[in-house]
Image (cartoon, rainbow, N blue to C red; front, top):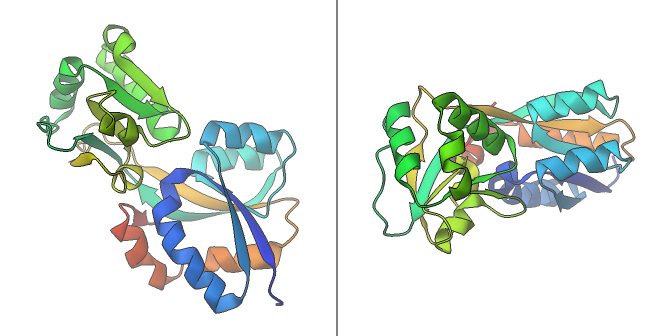
Length: 227
């Protein structure tokens, strides 16, 4: 296979592991990778609107929706990710040992930040189930295009919720820990070949590289579990 350029559209959840692994892939194969970082909501509308790339990396549920729309030809799971909690560096860490403890922390917080991605969608449903969605509505900042942790680092919210992999690299925050098991939501992030991919073979080679045993330690180091 001759060296070529692969166009990848992906969400930020897999970013840190990807940024470490892709240069290794480029050195080993001679292929070049162009990466388009797009929030999940925008990615869905752009792809459904006719934009074409070679590879899409997104939550498995969203990729399945694109497959059902005839835009993605196959799906390979890359990593499993849980939701984490963070506060501003040096701030008191709340008790998050149970769902009830998280509920108390959210009610006590002056501001809450979460994303428009899979973790944010889940949290909206979780707070509805907890019966607190209305009472915290005025305190919530739903963030798009930057990590929720950045809002907390600037002091614009007290507590941030997002995929662990998206919180760990943010400067100016302290990672409190993952959500407790009784309310945790695991999201699978997957790679899908675009039906109109110009470089399908090279894109498949990248997927093979990202799922190889050598990639597993990098994925773990960045707050996810290999799928």
